[in-house]
Length: 388
Length: 91
Image (cartoon, rainbow over the protein chains, first blue to last red):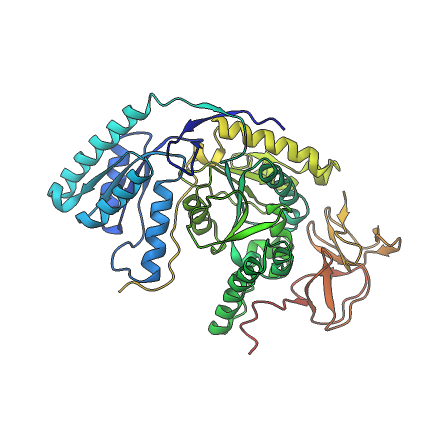
């Protein structure tokens, strides 16, 4: 299979190329969100990433947040970043990290600039300079899936997801992996009920054990709270669409990751630097899950929906796929790829899969997704312990 | 396709169109099943009678347990199926 698209060369291992070249304006803590939003409104075509929290976190929770921020700002689609914070240390360590990955970065520190308006001016100047610097970036040919990282996600699922949309995405995932690429599956609660299927495909017992462990954590937490998770997962729109239990949802959900062996389990926001299929331990809702995938280094994410989920991600193109005949019609402004022919015309999974793979290649080459055009994306870093 | 039976061992099929009482479907093992009530698009139909406490099988795997007797050809969903996982409410 020949792969042909053009990507922005990235000199920093492990990322060989990016499929976008974004200028990001990042808040390292939530007290500077106003400054970040103002900078992004002063300089068009920059991506603001205001944040919730980021101060007063400690321990594993802080490790997770910092790991995720670092992963997001060094995602291969980021061409440059302006890091805004209140105080110096939190900004400089992120700038240093970005530099270590060859990502142009500068810090804007409100307490150093003097006040929020001075910080906006400083940040706007830095963002504008990045926009000019990156305007001469050129794409180069990419002839292999090696180095490409695909995220797979589902949201607003119903029974068409497991029957049609996810098998199509799974077919594409297999092609990417067979071509030397990486695929990341996440949403741990949507493995609950199907973990034995994935564990059986683990490359060794340690990996199988990790899969069982992350799913057991979900179940133990439900027991700790004394609550049936039905309603939280599956959510009301899943149930309205015909999904009855988390087991049914999960058995349909894992199909989107294809059939290849599982190489390992990644922590939330951990970079996926090796080829093959990986599982990342994330919550199920889109903003948190896509944030984990972006931090993991995804170039593109395929996202199936049955009842209709509109979420994209600010810095990663998200291709919305649906096989529900009514959803592809009603949600045309938000759905990129119509897989409903499997249901309405008995078209084969492989035939529709080839179409999705072709569409994905065009997106990698620069074709915009609807979520990018409409800016239907937000990020949200998962928390695991309270702030002090 | 009008409905999908994912695996030969399944005791449910998933409707991919609306069904009404009197419609018939064929299971993979060649039986004809008569639908006895309205089934919305995307919802499941029992391929055979399922006793209270029995497992619901889809994709060849257990997806839950019947909370009461489910007659052949009737709707299978949250009103008559409970999950076996994530049941923090059972201690």
